[in-house]
Length: 200
Image (spheres, rainbow, N blue to C red):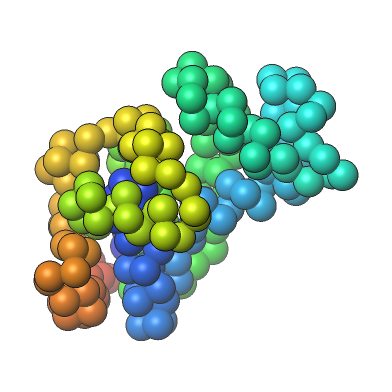
């Protein structure tokens, strides 16, 4: 089974692409959803976050996302501190998940594949690309964030042009290139590649 990474900057549309692969019957692991789950369910991680950011990081046993965001998205050192706690737990969880999958290939979606040094874990990495202005609009429409807050979050990720050059395949989710035909083409290529690796 091929292990596929799916990445892209905030607002690029990774989740939309992941949903299309899901419709095609491909198992997809969302690092964002997993990290949220782990921050609310993993006792060791919860204890580490409280120790690093204070008891107020949780209210009623649930992660206080607004409180944590107000700290980490304005301070790169604090964001790195949080990531140093959350990423290892998510990477372990994702590795266990993908090891349990069956089929021609499975996808792990993460915006921080390169930032976290995860690329050796994958046979192929797909990048999702979109213009900055469109990415900002998508996030402000989705979350109600202001544009500057989105730009600040973007500055905490590798520049998209660099990230896309590091990927093996790039999907253009720019509202000009039809998305589904690109995914279908990649799906066919991965099925062929998986069949070849199995027969070998």
